[in-house]
Image 1 (cartoon, rainbow, N blue to C red):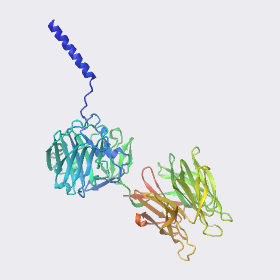
Image 2 (image 1 turned 90 degrees about the horizontal axis):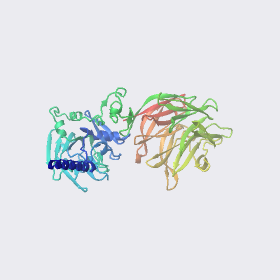
Image 3 (image 1 turned 60 degrees about the vertical axis):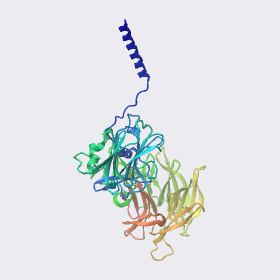
Image 4 (image 1 turned 45 degrees about the vertical axis):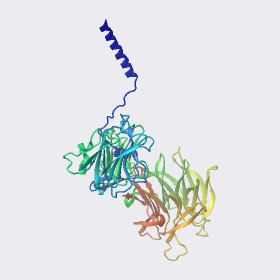
Length: 610
């Protein structure tokens, strides 16, 4: 009887314990992750366009420099530590870096910030000859361990391994020297990673960013990476460290392979390597595997290097102007203002074909010796304005404004405007108001015909006369929030010699007086057009060059240099040109198109950057 009671008592106790276990909260799962996590690679792959990242190759080693003014790069800890609530208490951080100029200020190579984006959970920073490891203890308190080595300031490439356990931190530099320190305050067992985020080369502030170059920033969980890396196979070859510490296949690698030719056809982009980065050495292009295809990433601010011949555009007659524009959802278009053999020659609109890499005919519009086209947008409406040069016995003719019709997918006439031997249109916005300015060249009595400014009236959905100017051709643009108008002058009627070599001008709008004032004169030769374009952070102007003969001419590209205004930086030979236009494709290729005033064949030049 007593034995039976003991058995039932044991069974009841076990049932009670099972119930208690079932009702209690589950224990936090330990971190069971990939052996190695590439934080640098994940940070670069997280954004589609990682602007401000410059790739520099030195002695066969790729380095990544981060612009201090660029966006912050990093990756959420949740993407790395997916199966645990707390940060592991045993791990290694591997960083490969180079510092050209050691600084007194702290420079953060890596930080893990809490959900408030201020509290440092983990930090790796450099200061002169010191490498610091920071970690969070409690209530915002930070503890640091420092490692001093003169080689940290020698300007060379180094790989540092920081191995952390519960009570110790070990520093290993380039597998040659190591030092172990005991922690006065143990690394926390319950460092919550929810909402935290890794930041590469910063602590999420403009100050204290790392100004050198990085090659790798990696996290290895539950192991001393120095024992793995610094084997007999190392033989003092730092590049072996990066190649031996490869990422788990689920994560992209930060060590981008150099490819001497385009191997996109050979390198498969699929589910198993989504996010992988690939650097093409031949054309300095960084690509990422996404949606089963390689997508180009912009990793640095491009700078104009030179131009190469890319192709031709065949027009119905000799064009006097080219206008390139893009309509969202439709594509890139090119409109030509054709001179024609008679007054009723149609002008053409072409559309860029991504498959054929050329412009194909899209629409014809009847014009009267068209001199120029101008595309502009008001809210969600797309417009094309044509300046017709043909005139009656009084020197007047109607120029026209066309509006894009979404249903019919073509441009239809919106408004006629009386003009006098019109040369060009220009469109711009100041303080939210939309303006059009027409350059009237001459009437039958004078070569100084007034030009008019028109302002958009939203109530009547039309342009109305607003002010008077004197001009030949206009190009509006902005630089750093400043408003400019460039005027292209073609001919000086008062000179007897070299009448085509005249000054064109750049004006700046001064809001305090609500007027444009002259900023600079630029020497041009028979200029019919000014074109403004940008490459990276640089701003450029190029003027079309013509004359009264068919000889080759030099075109000049001017670059904006702030206090020096526009200065000439590139000169190249061209045929007599009536107009320049620039455009960029979805693939990131940038082009200039010139309208050949003496031929039906206009030239496309590709802008090569470095």
